[in-house]
Image (cartoon, rainbow, N blue to C red; front, side, top):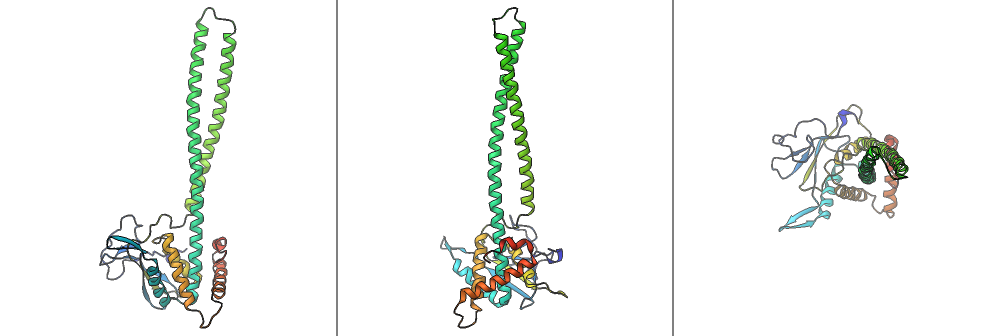
Length: 305
């Protein structure tokens, strides 16, 4: 994505906000507290085709505290988001945002599965190296014992028949064990280097969101209408929006946002539409093709969009 189109542009704090105070554990430059301290607000995100020049969308936490007890308030969180989204975006934008969100969620899920598989391989390799270290200590102890026996045998003026032959056999066996250990240790170190390379590739292509927790307090998404001589496509604009949401929203919060988007889509259906699911599926499929045509990397994640 070009620098001038990044979701978290290097823009100053929104008008009327206090001096920027970094929120512990959050990515610097993205989260700012509002004057009241009751909300966290995003930096301005430029979106093409907004119905207003400036908009604020409040995303409510799904877990709320009432009377000292925590309650799941997902229904209210979805309702709050849906009412605001429906007033700001066109049907085309809502459909494309749903497709973009699904793509990002599937990509994030794939990344987590690949990371889990890589972690399992790291664990197996660590156990393998621990076993090799134990084997090396055993081989070294055997080599030392045989070396001491050889010194004693060479110093003895007379020895029992066959002792030298047995010692020579032991020396050959421990030399073979040492060669086998070195070969196995070399393969293990090569496997270590390979895992490091795979991990570097995985981290380089990692989605922005990975360990984000559920929203703990209301989050305000600050949107501004993009001013460009040549506006971006709907797919590019909604990709920008969804990419920004990868930072503050957990996977659960993103699923609730998808529900809110789909509620907005269905509410925009023609009156008397009897085949609502087929109508919605048709819109999502067409938007998926358009999104995939513009972002080739997204094609593997568009199945069933």
